[in-house]
Length: 345
Image (cartoon, rainbow, N blue to C red; front, top):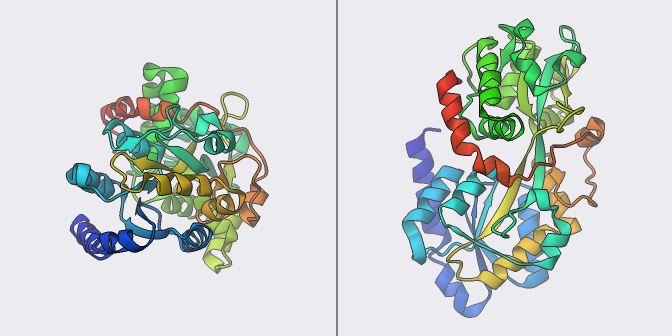
């Protein structure tokens, strides 16, 4: 779907969703959510929240850039209460644009680890996913791709597949590399990855996994949930891909595997702030954590919650990078400039 059609659909959704807000406000409590999530399991989240609190949920769903654009254009007149998205970089962008307000909640601070929330309470993670390395089981020794740095090793020249370096998933990984190694070493790494590409970056993470299975490359970067979808699938094509490929959790002997988040914050001009805080606290509950994470085959942010998900269970446990997610945002601009310099299109 091209940008014009996405924006048209977004505008239409906005017109449908929010003319009702003022009418409902007089009769019953409401909550207006701007969401970039589109998972069917979220419907149960919203339904259960309304049952528990009596608060009716209205929502606009669109891609993060369109949501940010709309919020900035609406300004103080925005009816939005919650910004709910699936990438730390966009939460950081919203915060830096002055679109979020701090929330102080002992429940949220107790349930969500400090590394997965903004220190000032502008946003909180409610699930996380790992940036894994997918490899061809017939062609690659997993020990040879035990780190992200290995993707820049000349032994993999012409054997690496990725999506665009400017995509938020790769931008966030590059931001993490800057935080851990400094900009010069991170740039050398990114330059090495580009030198090893089997083809021009294209498609999404699922396309990278399929390319490995098809022999177009032998290693690729992918978010864990894309591989989990394949592992949970009973389609013949996916079963075949699952037999040919596997994943490595990089940097287990150093800082751990890079993770990104799905999270939310209360919008600066939220007309229903109290309801918005209640919703964030609900998302941190055991019940909601399972639904929220399973909606995209991710792990719950609350450490005590263990979802029933066959693919995630098959992955076992691994060391995740405990670097505060906020560091990704701080390094995002530098990461984009670096990506541009090395030509990771």
